[in-house]
Image (tube, rainbow, N blue to C red):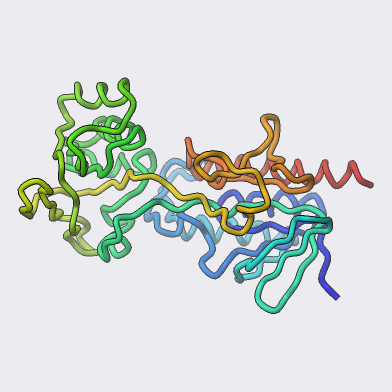
Length: 310
């Protein structure tokens, strides 16, 4: 017989673990399927300086461990296993993970999003050691340094402009000869004296090691078909994010970018009893603190939904 739960939470980054904390404190005894690689994007973050309550920097993995222990202290059950499938056609919802099947009266999706990468081996090795996918998170670590921003859309221009608050020089590497960004975002970057551009170029490798960080990058001129090395101390990837919605893509309403659509007033998804929180719904802020905030909202929304049925 399948194990039935009041609340099942899929995902264990800041959103999922905050939802677990609130649901557990409200006696909902949540089950968290945290996946085989729990923690989300914080697990590749070295120092977190912008989460309230931590006077000194804390590593991303340490923050996740603190959140896990706090949720478990109040009775959340965390299972280090991926959810393989969900069936949302009827309630209770059916969730399978390996050989186990669970039934959920309510479901909170906190599956997050992943940054698009270039496909270089060095990206994974140097992530958090000079390679970043979040200027807002990591920009202050690059004061008076030369950094590259890879991309040509609005996100890349926003990252590049933000980084000029800290970096000595920001070089945008873009594979085309013109930006894809909106006129206002493009012009803002083009007019900034701290930003220069490598047009029709791609990054082919990132140089450095985990101990000393990024030391440079190899870039290729697509028009001249020539490759060279340039010195830099950071590489910011701004080529978009991919929401992790493969579990529910055929069952829930998604927006044009593939993010789960939620109600304007709460975290309710398009099927009653399903709630979505964190980066799987947020393509704008993508911060640990905003993800945690929506995790709280999702747990409270699930609680109110369950109470309305009793």
